[in-house]
Amino acid sequence: MTDSDREIIDYLGFDLPGENQLAQARRTALLRGLEGSAEPTSLVSYTSAGLVLIIGPEPSALSVAESLVGSVTCFVLATDAIDNTLSTPMGYEKRQVAGQDVPIIFGKPEKILGHLGSFEVIIERDQREVELAKVMNLASGGIDVVLDLARDPLLRTELLPPGYFAPAGDSSRLDQALSDIPELAGIFEKPRYVQYNPDICAHSERGIAGCTQCIDVCPAGSLTSLAGRISVDPHLCHGMGSCAAVCPTGAMTYAYPNLARTLDSLRRLLSSFREATDLSAVLLLFDSEHAGSTVKGVVANMAADVIPWRIEEVGSTGIEVWLSAVAYGARSVVIVTTTHTPSSTRTALESQVKLAGVLLEGLGYSSNYVRLIDVEHFSDSANLAVDPSSEIRVAATYGGIDEKRVALRFAFDHLLQVGNASKDLIDLPTGSPFGTVNIDTDACTLCMACVSVCPSGALDDDKEQPRLTFLEWNCVQCGICERACPEGAISLHPRLLLNAEQRMQVRTVNEESPFLCIDCGKPFTTQSMVSKMEEKLKGHRMFQGDGLKSLHRCEDCQLKAMF
Image: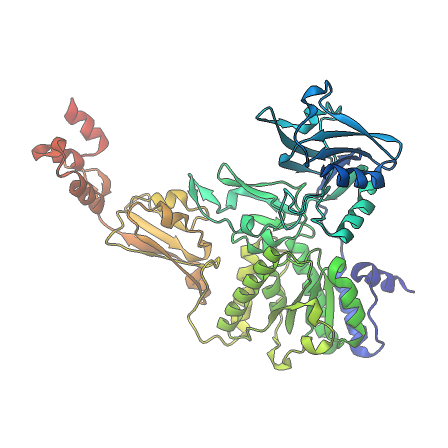
């Protein structure tokens, strides 16, 4: 076995068959894609002493404990009896299980927080909530592993916290938990899968809610809203990556590998295959843990122009990667899903694939370039067949880009340049990350509230005169400006302008002459704002007769008039 064989097997989990010219070109292309080293990412650590809490009815919990004592330290929260520990000085009792003492306390959990090595379990005691670890006087102050035997477990996220097991009545899942738990003592590390840049986040501004897409698609509940920004708990994160895929600004990015590494690898891979064969490849994206064995089983029946490429998680790529792969010359991009794909991740993928299809069709290409295929329908290579006439003859060469919106702009510009789009713009589905704002100029008073909250700098003002400007490419359709406008003068219109110059051009969306102070002549507001205030205050006793003139004076002249 050559070093090249080992490198391919180490990456894919299997070798690529075939000795003909096309198969050899595929192997060479894959090796070109693997060149270089990935940028390192920081690590997340867990420290566990193997202290296991079993939650459930006393007989069941003690029976399960019998399978664990000797390999880990167990104690039980029995949920099938009233709290009878008030009479015990320690607050708990002990039971003999397989010759060892197992502490047992009676009650029901109200709340479970945390992760492997650091669980906090809250129970009700004396009509108040108390922490179980304190009741038990645990020296470590925390619980390392939780085995919840309830048929309706307390934690319900699609992907449970590391160290929390909830078989929900499934005997095979219980057996697997009993096999895994003894291994969870020690120090464990994993990559910090996602990175977050709050400076470009469109989640909230000045208390006005905006984008929640990353929170909505996270299957692990590792993302929460905190003080107007996104809080990421890396210990709960399973690295599915769908948060980064749907983020409109690129504030949430996948770091394992990062975007620049991913794009450069795919560019080398696809260009190498085309240079050797004059053909475009089908790019097959799969995660090795759940789809690898199926891909391995059918790789011998795949056409040699189908190149499998392992990604960390099925949800970790989005339109910036897929459209760039098309721009690099991929004839098709196929993402393999499995029964293990969380429903929230699958929904996010379906939404992103739909958006990619609308964009590609509007750019003059087949909407079928990017597809999802479930691993169950992956038994033969016929499902990967793509019309050869759909390939792009001139491949893009850009690379080294680690910003989502920049990568998308390069992809759009290249696909437009080599394609045959016949439209001026593409109307997009609601929730798309591109678009314009429509301003009702009759209602707008140029108060600039929208400018003060726009998180992406799409809306701006003119320091010299009352003028509202808009840069369409910067708009991510978060809706914060729409909700901030006191006059209801703003509405969103998701779309993509195909003229790159217009897309990047600052344009005026509303302007008017300034209102001049009646005393000093200084411009201090707009005509429409004064008219609006006159209309609102005309019935107020303080603004009758000459009192209305106070609205016509700047702040300095108002003070002078008062004294």
